[in-house]
Amino acid sequence: MPKLKLFSTLFLFSFLMITCQQEEINSLSVAEVDQLMQKFDSGHVIIDVRTPEEFKEGSLAGAHNVDVKSDSFKEKIGTFERKHNYIVYCRSGKRSAKAYKIMKELGFTNLLNMEGGYLKYEEEILNK
Image (cartoon, rainbow, N blue to C red):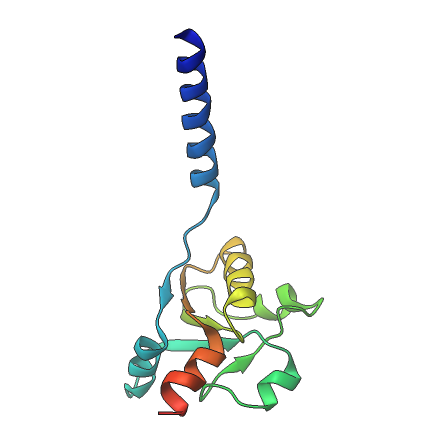
């Protein structure tokens, strides 16, 4: 019985540690992002964290391109006002999650991640 209690306690402790370490990412669907973009003044700055080559192939209207793979990402994104509202996206959602975490570490407070990235946006919005 004591071994079972010890195992249960260790399992619970491990689960809580992992859960606490994972930072939740606030996300919007592409449909929700599209609705925000339709508003005259949504108050959101859109950040595309793909490479410049990917950005040239197509992007959300008004998006700023700041490549998260670039060595100067932190420096460039650090020039943006921390208190503005931001929507971050990439090709499929992986790089934007990385950029989101970096931006949080730099003190950005109002961040949203577009789920599914530009691929999902093309599929659901542009190719209707």
